[in-house]
Image (cartoon, rainbow, N blue to C red; front, side):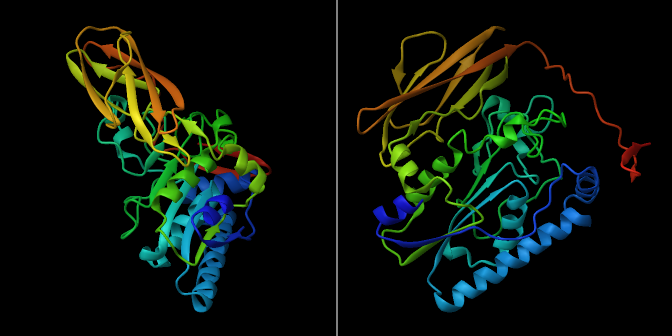
Length: 338
């Protein structure tokens, strides 16, 4: 982020927001967060503290430098802090908000047995990376509407596969994806989004709730990163239906993508030019592999692939519905469910 700020002629400050975050590995903390939607008990008080600290920091900076532009990043519990605090920020001064593993995820296109996201349709504008097409709501509920007033086009959501916290799985112990946002270069991906939204010249950009742990040298190593991304890694389509394949979240850091190339049913790659989204008709029940190749203005390429599963009739759900009348009590170090 510092490298990008300098390249665009900005002065900058990176701030790691300090507040007493708590671990949900403690069963009592986890239970309190779950039953209150993250709003009460020890977890909720921790979030409240973070929100207060971020609001106070914002006010102190604005008093001394009112033209500051803001880039906010929040991970896990930090995403809740940013979501609540950003509502007091002046929207025109917010460049971008990146949320990773958000417990209040809301992706309406992921609802139902055959959600629209599985057909690549009606994807939320803030959906940067959520490859599990049935991701609908976070583990602590959802924020609806997800994007506060005035911040449309400035929000980005990342939700890895196997991330119970942001709702890509409902299996509590299948949470390995929640720890891999840095490993998957998602923060670099966010930096690319930010650079595209920065005005040509300003005095200061501030990043809240994210530490610049990698440092400038590591950013030097990834500044030429190019990655191809499809909106899902599995599309479910009824026979004689249409699937939308969206590659708009592909990126080439510091360069422009000049060509999107496709192979949908095993044919040779063909080009859609600079159009990052295509539609294809499917007729017979079977499984296809779609391949995407992107080319940037430096001649570099990257590829991605996904499955298209075509079925007859309605898809069957293999999800067992949870009881809606259960109660839980934490006592003597144990959680009792009734």
